[in-house]
Image 1 (cartoon, rainbow, N blue to C red):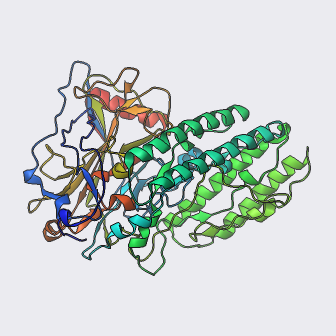
Image 2: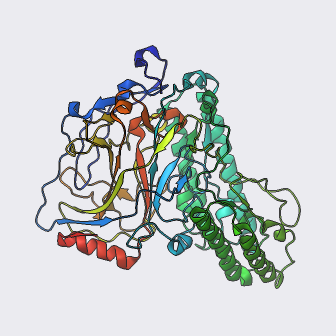
Image 3: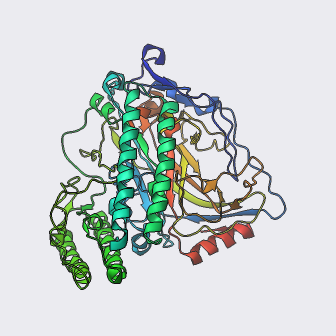
Length: 567
């Protein structure tokens, strides 16, 4: 990493200097607001001796009726090497959407596309059987000088990336086909218009402008997806998860090099989608077709899990193709009992492993392949023995320890989380989207009373740590929301949830690293990040999908409410 003075570099953009402070149920961080600017490269200004950070964590005093217990889960430290650049919570359906690599512990099947039913059937690294997914960006040590992304910025045209919708829909009944196609066309037009607007910010990163494009796009997508859900009689699952879009700065990759040796983090199978190739389905066949579409999803998830356990083909593709052939045949038979036999679906059975996004096969029944409504696309896969992506280079540092805790609330008993709840903490894009959701996470072992928005330099014998608190309040209804955040909230400084929200077990994940002291002092370790963040320590974040059974989550809540320490 380059360690020259920040004043000698071109600044990409100024961002808000005030952190909107949010409080967890068990701790409160007071910050001056992060770096105040987005720099073209990581510098020594991004590192701070932890002893120079003033104590800033305040623990609310428990009131009568508080939940003071802790439930600990041991899911390991990703020793099995489940690395992936997918973002299953923030960018569902977009392969390699994170543009950086995550450590995954817990659920072994999860990818950007895995349905809830497949998550529930998956294996796990957690010792108590918890099938939840916990994942965070990796830390790397890189002693080389990084290329300066400022050179690439003047020629970079940002784009808007949204999850695909067409290939997430259930079977479309004949009576609704025309109306569904009209709504999908509206999604395409809204995305095209957003891309026309965002192109005006060529050569600069402006969080305010980006949000002025994304906010109305999100609102329009939410309206369209609500109409689609109504047209499909509520059979469309969680379309709300497909509302949010992101601004992508892929052009910044031009300023970076990656290793030439190809490798794939968390190899997974790539299969042609079937849902968007189906003709209109007779009403009498809808239920049977939907069951078989769900079975296709489960088959892919099972194959992905097998690849995590034993990377390489190992017979996975052959077995998967046989299963898909039989399942697709059942779909064809179900449709042909009441309508013309769909042609070309048999071409969709074959899959590949870790070779990127394949060219789509011909549309069923001939004709032009329809566009991917919603604008989903696949970004570069990691390469080389270190699973590097452009700008994210160096050897991955494996965590020395990972502590996963479900904690209580200082003012009230907690309610069990609903199964398949999605949650985010921190913000991977404080530069391009603003710092409102960013949270300081960095500290050193032995310094639990302080958190920093810079990389810490720890005393001898102390470990570098990231302490990531998730929201501890839930709206009581939704497992996800259009921005993946609104259904959850942080408690206030006293520990109270906002009106209309109830306390849930608050998840805290603490990650420890053994990083040589000289590497810390030279600024040679950093977080994987989106290209425009340039390893900004304030972009640290963590994602979670609750796949605990209702019984297990009730056990967690009972432990926390009783004031015990369980595990």
